[in-house]
Length: 287
Image (cartoon, rainbow, N blue to C red; front, side, top):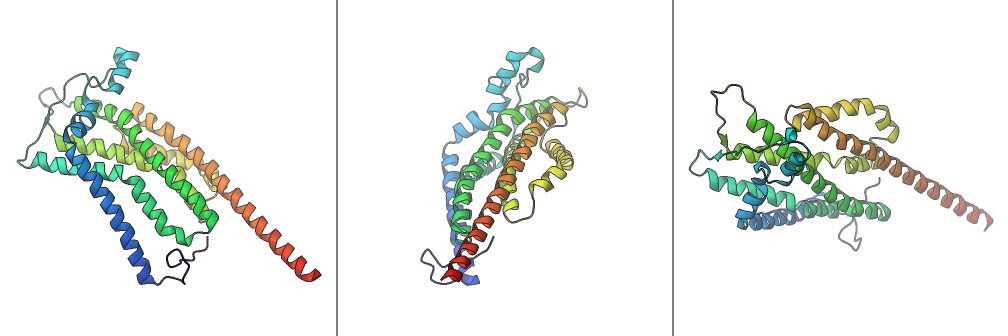
């Protein structure tokens, strides 16, 4: 992929290093503004964010908890109330600010990705820019899918396991609200990031770091890595780890197909380029 940075949209010569930094600075500023705006919105909707979103997975009426209970009584989770505590005077206001910031990061993700794409767009050919634009939408959809997967599936299971696990009857769990929220947000953000695997495969194939043959060759190694990642972002039980590993394995296979598509497109462009050169030389020789 050849890089050919241009100044603005008019192609008035190549940009200098300082101009690149200035351009990057404005993209970062717009991204930060988007995060701050969504953060303020999330901060204002405190009751909804905490009661309907953050604290909902520990409630017996949460959709995942009710669904598992409807399947079997043995699958019922989060049926006992979990009381959260705040042990610092400024703990709740600090927690409110941190949650609003995390919500701002999640909601502003499409804007951040779009600004990143706008920064790279002058370095791409027209056909590459068109495919990358589609990758912005796909990346956002995969990220939100990962976040929702973590929120609706992994979070309730993790909360149930970690809040009910006991080393002794004489030890009572008094869970800090910051610890609860930290676990929830880390799970959601981690699954959102790992769901970006097909997009990562697209760009790594585009720049020639990986190939479909490479991914197929090291599929067994990838399976081991996937289960390690699943063990890191889930509680230490086989059911939760398998629940995470299955979609990651599926995403890995999808990534191979994505890589195959990139390689085919590259070969097609190469063949078209060679055909055009041959036709130009033939025209030049006949004239």
